[in-house]
Amino acid sequence: MADRELEFFYKQMESNLNKASQGGVVLTSFLDEARLAYIETLHSKDVQILFDGGFDGAEHKRVLFLPADLKANAFKIKVYEIEYNSRYLELNHRKILGSLMSLGIKRESIGDIVCMGQATYFACTEEISAYIESEFKTISGVGIELKEVKQRLSIERELREEKHIVSSLRLDVVIASAYKLSRNEASEMITEGLVQINHIVCQSISKQVVLDDVISVRHKGRFYVGTVGGKTKSDHLVLQLKFLV
Image 1 (cartoon, rainbow, N blue to C red):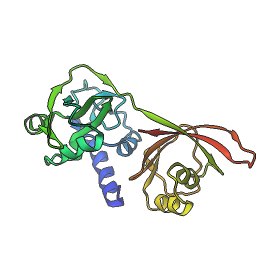
Image 2 (cartoon, rainbow, N blue to C red):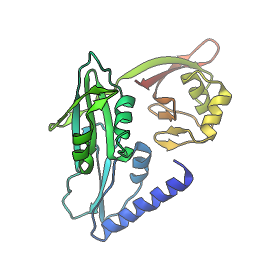
Image 3 (cartoon, one colour):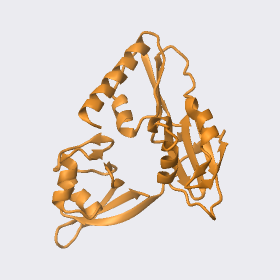
């Protein structure tokens, strides 16, 4: 997020917290993990801050700010399965999101898009659901049908494991190895604010990564830091990385 955008977001969330402390209820649109990580740092004894994305294990979630003594309201999320003929259409996250955006729908109205084999689902705000049901009829020119999912689904994310030999656990070294970049290329991406560790932007090239860190690189993807499995004869580290497919 750009500094100005980030500052505006911080003020908006602090305003939501203040409204809830005075008896109001605020429901956000879907937020990404970086924004959610910031909200998790907010605290008030007078306010409940609740999260839900429509799926168990969702990454994009709506946030509900409400007084501590008030029973939680609905998050107003709908989940749909996309039914299609796999002979004529192969679905992926990019195609689905692109088709939805082409309808003029804002990204924050859409939650997670989940492809589990041929079963494909997405979450959206209830406020936009009628429009989606009416207008979302094709993807890549192929007809589709939407079926609302009533039961709670759990997301199963596919991970690809790789072993990497690295000279150290510095962030620039690990990113360079993970994406087959030069150290200079990795360093530039970090200093330009394109890298997040655990959903927070990190601009320190010498930051040491640790077990279970989640590292996201804009335009490249995301991976999880696995075990360090010992050293090679040249005193390099054997590092296991898990990439989100």
